[in-house]
Length: 144
Figure (cartoon, rainbow, N blue to C red):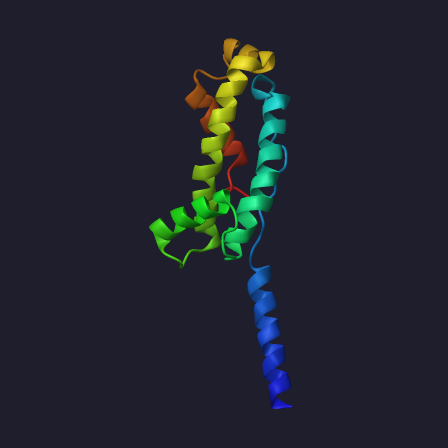
């Protein structure tokens, strides 16, 4: 009888610990008309959904890394915080790694997407760095 209560308490504690993790969402940000570039939003939301599923979720749940993305995120967390990291720290490290990839994609889109080039010509962004900073603010893991 006593062991039933202990087992029930352990299960309850496990569920409470798991429920404290609030997974980030990959939803479309709102923009003013000058900064509204649907192709960029679609690219970022698509990449963020994939990042959350394949990289963020396993690391925040402290599962052993199974792919390069999880390994890179885990190693960055381990260098900064050892193995005693929390979700806010995963969010900050995810911003660094995720937006490194977004930066590469944005620069490609600046060369190949007419809508992105048009927004830059019209003064929506003064540079690639300005554009990255804008989207990092809109899609950050730390702002969820």
